[in-house]
Length: 270
Image (cartoon, rainbow, N blue to C red; front, side, top):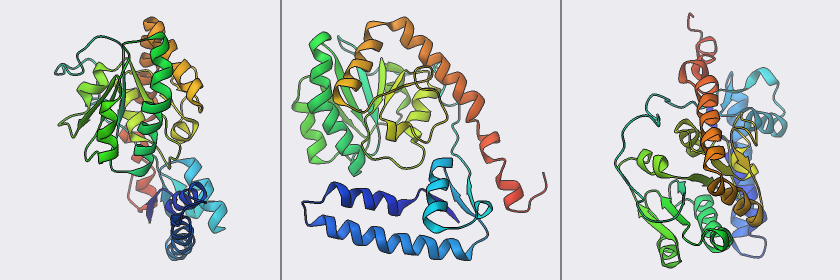
């Protein structure tokens, strides 16, 4: 069974966030019912798969199943496709450094992340970088997300045919997620594109990379703003971090290596 993430844990977090709202009870019930269903399914299969060691460890603790029945088969990234040396259409043209967020923009954790960045973090960055801009790149933006474009420096693209030109144009890629499960593919893509990344601890948790070397990690508005501003102030450091990030993606997250555990699990010959 490929669970991908411990989805019941996501609803438990929603319930904790919504304690003063009626949806608290809905999310709490969903967490309990889905958690029971996950455990029931896992008990019937030979192996339960998750996209990161952290998710596998969490599920093992919640389900009580032995380690050999709960395993991590991590996501990978096509580093030939996400390659900064390729030619891309010019996007995001304008004065001032550009921070980019990519994702499905009717998904609650993404909505919460961009709203926080636009309202609380970008104004702090613009104290030192008055022309700094923030592009929200992704399909199906809600009315709430579209309304952020009225704020100074905020761009809402809606669906784009290809996120790579926006990643290539970014001076920094940001992922200020308050809630994240598994591995954030948006970060694998940005790092493969040799972009310097600033992520929350939740967003970075599933990725085997060293904070300070391959990406920057911060959890407060002031901390994220400081990290992004530092990259804007020091392009050489940003370039070096991006190069280190791409090297890490090539070494650690190539698809051949990431999918190798599936053969033995399925009883296939090497």
